[in-house]
Every structure is written in structure tokens, then in C-alpha cells.
Length: 115
Length: 114
Image (cartoon, rainbow over all chains, first blue to last red):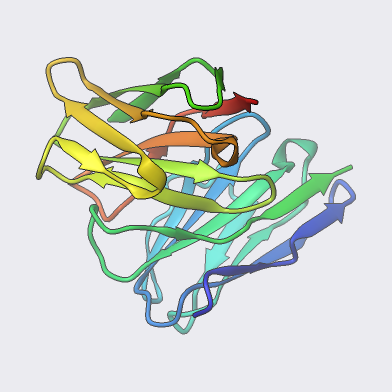
């Protein structure tokens, strides 16, 4: 079966450009997470959706970051007016159910480079 | 609040030797603990998880980890390293008061020498 997919896999943006990163979770998965992974570091939580509801966005670093999951399936992470410090790998993960013990399935990530 | 510390950003072992990757956690409530493996240009894959059942947890590829509350540790071990084990390993903690938001350590890169 298909896993979590993300597109594009690589994105180069000039500083100041807006970008949109897409995540296709495993079909039927209720929970969806976005993480940011800087070079040489572990993933850091950005935001969490339960179906279409964004229940936690405490990790979004600024108001330039916006995420949505309008139909409770595909999610998009948008970064406006990109800055060099936004360069990182953005990981999406989905989980079948709500709950802390459930396995999160990760996509391959989108590597964003801001020049 | 929760945090994870992985001791040693790089670990090198010989093929066939014991693998020990260290993880210490901090959590204000009973934690759930995870180990993930990440191969180059791939997403994270779950190796094993502790969710308050048995303290010794067995995972895939011969890995296991032991939850020690008194030491706030969850070290990952494998009796005999294989070349294919070379990868980056992440320890993560999730408090059981939220819906799965995980806090990750900075990772340990495992190198296996022939």
C-alpha cells in the first residue's frame, strides 16, 4: 500500500518568495503532523491536524507559516516571504488514530533551500 | 514539558559488535518513547516504541530498548551490528496528555565498519 507522500521532494526558493509544500497522508489516517528538520538536528514539531481541524499550531515559528487540511486528507504547508532560516527538510507524518501511543508514518520530506 | 537528549552524535562499531545508542528523556507526565531510524533521503521509520507495557521492548531488525524510569533512560541496543544498520537514529518522547506531538533528540549517526 502507498505510504505518506510529499511533493515536491526538493524546492529552491529565492528569499521573499512564497512556497507551498504538499503532504498526502495514508488514506484513512485521522492525525497529521508537520515537522521541520534543520541540518544536523532532529525533527521539531510544527503543527497537528485531527481530520480537518488544526488542533495545535504551537510549533509554527512565525505568522509566515500557515498549514491547512481542508477536507481532512491532503495537507499543505505554506511559507510566505521565505527567509534563509527557513531552509530545512519539512516532514509530514500521519497516524491512523488519535492518541499518543500510535505510530506515526513519515513521508520522505521536502528539502527547502532558500537562497 | 518534555525533552530528549541523545548522548553521542556519532557512534562507530565494527560489524558483529554490540550497538548501544543512548537516550535520556525528561517528561512531567508518564512518557511514551520511540526510536526511529532514518536512511539518507528517506523519512523516519519506527524501530520500536514503549507505551507503558513491558519495560523491555523488542523492535524490528533485531533492535531492542529498555525503559528505566529511575534513570530516565531508553537506550537502544542490538547484539550484533550489520552493515545495513548504518543510518541515523532518533529517540523521541510523547507525553500522554496530547495527541501525539513528539519531541525528538538530535540524532545519532551509526557507522558500521567492516
